[in-house]
Every structure is written in structure tokens, then in C-alpha cells.
Amino acid sequence: MTKHSPRKIFAFASLALATAFISPREATAAKLDLMLDTEIKAASYGNVNFADPTPYNAGFFTQNAGAGFTIKNIKPSLAHDTSIDISIKLRAVGVSGSTAPYRPPFDQAADRYPSTSFVPYMENAYVRVNNIFNSRMAFTAGRQPFKLATGMTLSDDGLGFGGFSLKQDKALWDIGWQAFAFVPYTAQQGASEVYITGASLSLPAEGLWQLYSFWELDNRTQTVLAQQMNKATRMFSGISYSMRIGNMAFEGEGAIQRGTAKSGGGGNSISYKGYAFIASGRWTQSLMKLGTGAARLSIGRASGDRTDTASTDEAFFPSFGHRYNGLERSGFGEVFASSLYDAMGGTATTANGLPAGVSGIQMINFGLTLPPVKGIITELDYYAFEAATSATGGQRLGSEFDVRLVYLLGDPLKITFAAGTFKPGSAYADGVKSPSKVSLEVSSRF
Image (cartoon, rainbow, N blue to C red; front, top):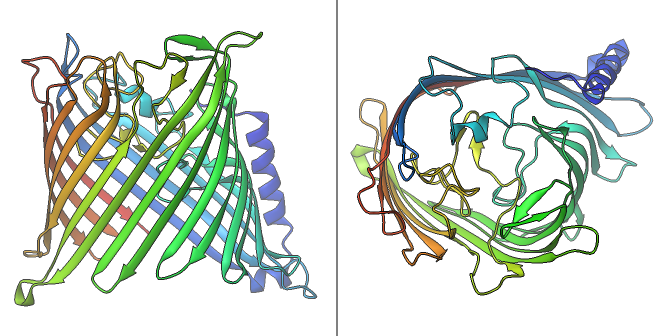
């Protein structure tokens, strides 16, 4: 069921009025950009929740479509070099032909949305003031897209974050900065009880360095180390680096988590003390008449909780790190689809999708992109997963092999066939069956 809060109605009305009152002189200087994108996917999963007593098969069609516009370069005054951008984007997601509608773990992705019946919702609605005070600063207010560094710790994942951001490029010695304050939206609660504030610095060198720190003030009732807590404050501080030189590209990020969860009324408290890092490299090579291919390597690790520290949670776990794409998980592997701290890992009984007592994920990925044959690009990926900590002793989560065939019809249209299978390791009970996935996706973007 779609929900319309007074805050959303007010935001939409404000943007509509701002658009309506643009004068003809301002309109001639402004630029209108239209945005259209759609993804239609047929997916079949085998042995979902393979580690639970009742694994099942699932098949469905998903649709994920967005449409919007941005009016750029609105000049409020000819006496100043300040301009205004206004952007509105609607999105709709839905499932048809489902043999397992929103059963765990698919319900985690579906529960993020106001509606999963292909009813449009407001993904973005914001006003951006560029070069405010003639200082090269940009101020953005409203529901806006946002991703910090690689997205490992903070990403809106297609829902938009409501709030404010202030950004300035090349403020001093080419150093840029941004500050932000968001109230993320959750479908269950409307305006979330989580508040996010933070800032970052960008330092260009051979590539781009980014240093950041932000806080999650979480007022939701939650379970931490089997104890019920009334609120939690989590702080994430990190550094990222990205570069591209010739045929080589590299991207990496590392972060630490600190903070405290409290039960209220002077009760128990638990400290957070986690870390995570990811490093990815890609080499593109021309193979003469065969065309161009590529090899890629990724290594990542997140800390897990130790059993010998009852008052400290060492498991790295941000609330809004990148994990989803539409109504499915997005991560390492088509089947396991993991972040560095949770996964579609075979069970619906734990928050991280991993077996009870298992937390933190170590991942290594090696992949190849073969030269195209008759316009079809073949991508091969192998993943190995291991738990950072395990109360049961077995730490090997398993391995996965994926194949993707990609056909590009110009820039706007892409057809992707993907197949993958995951082989469980010693962290799971003997005899569990391997899960698998096959999908066909048609996507376009204009």
C-alpha cells in the first residue's frame, strides 16, 4: 500500500510551485534534462535458504522503472552568478508471476519500498543552489541521490536520502569538501528514526583520495548481542582512493566503526569496534584482432564479533551500506550476493543471512571479460568466501562461479543473461544442497 506523508506532499508542492514561477527570461537560460530508465528481469532461484530446514525454489519477473526531469541553470538574478537546479524523479517497482512472493530473504529488499505493486513513489525531489554566495559551493535540499566513496558504508540504493548537503569543489589547494545531514526513508516507519550527519574531504593526486566521517543516530529498538537496546550511536570513519592510468584502474576503501548501543534508563551498554576494507583492480588489454578483454581482482574483509567480549560488538555493520538493486540484492556473486557484512547466505533466521554465530566476511574475486564475439561480451567470475569469526568452528562459507553474457544494442539498451552456482563450505552443515540462479534482464537508459 502506498503511503503519502504530509512531508512528501509539501516537498512535491514546493517544487511544483518553484517550477511554475520561473519567469520567461529565466526559462530561456535554463536547460531541461529528461531521465528515463527501465529494467525488466526474469529470474529463477534454486534452493533458496539452503541452510534452513525447508529450502525452496523461486521464480519471478521484476520491473524497475524510473522517469524524471531536471531543470538546470535557473538564474534567480542577473546580478549574481548563482543558479538553481530543480529535480523530480519517480520510480516504480513490482513483481509478477512470483512463485514465492516476498518470502525471506527477498522480503528484505521489498520492505524498503513504499509500494511493490508498480505504483510510482518519489525517488528524488530536490532543489540545488549552485555557486551560492559566489563561492563555488552547492547547497542541495530535499530527497536526493547519495553515495559516499564506494558505497561500502553509505548509499541511498535507489531510494534517495531526505535532508541537506553542502559541497564545494577546489575550496583550497584543489581540496574539496562536503557536509550532509539526512533522515533516510524506510517503508515500515515512513520518516526513519535514524539520523545521519557527516562530512568528507576530497584530495586529488594521481587519483582521488577521500576522507570521511559520519554518525548514525539510531533510535529504533534493536537487538545487539542478544540484548534489547533502545538506541545506538554508530560512527564510521574511512578513507578511499580511486585512480585510472592507461589500461589500469583501481578503487579501494577502508573504514572503522565505533559507538555505543544503550538499553536506556541507565541499563546495559555495548560498544562497537569493527573495521572493513575493500580493494579492486582492473586491467584492460587489447588482444589485436580478437578485440579488447579485461582481468579484474577484488579482495575485501570485514571484522566479525568475538565470543570472548560480551560488552563489545566487533562486527562491522553499517545500516545503509550498498546492498540492493531494485527488488534483489546487489553484491559479490549472483547467488551469494554478499556485502562484506551480510549476504543472501542460506538462512532467514539471522540478521546477516549467515549461520548463527558467524559474522564478518572475507572475500576474494577473480574475473575475466573476454573479447566480444558477434557483439556478445562474456564475463566469468570466481568468488571465495570465508567468515571472519565463527562460534561453531567452521569458517569457510563457500565458493561461487558466475557466467554473464552481455549484448549491447548501442548505448541505451542492454540484454544480460546470467547464471551462477554457489558451493557451501564448512560453515554450513554437511549435506546442504548448492543454491543456483539463472536470469535474463533487459535494461535501457535514456
